[in-house]
Image 1 (cartoon, rainbow, N blue to C red):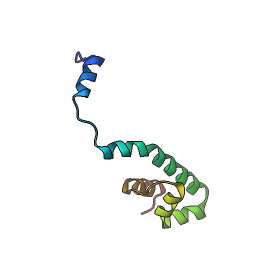
Image 2: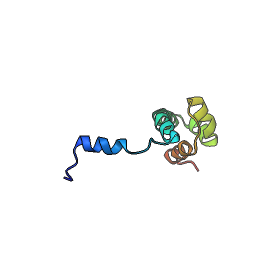
Image 3: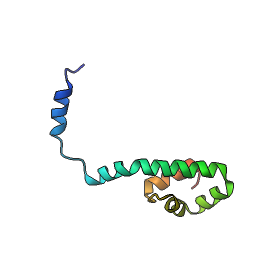
Image 4: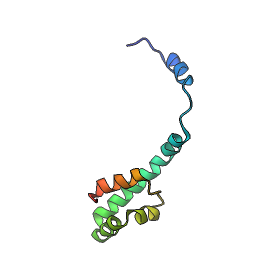
Length: 84
């Protein structure tokens, strides 16, 4: 133990600058992106024709799911689907 208690940690955290707005926005969007990715992957695993369509056009699949096609979301889907 380092001797830090919750109050001392809280006081130290208050001294930090606020998180950049981009980080805050990304953290807020992450649950929706994860849900969209899981939904697309589950559907692709169950339907070969759908899988072929999304591998051909991931951006369209994300738009259909209501998720922005950011580089990290696209990379995650490509990795999960084995698509390059």
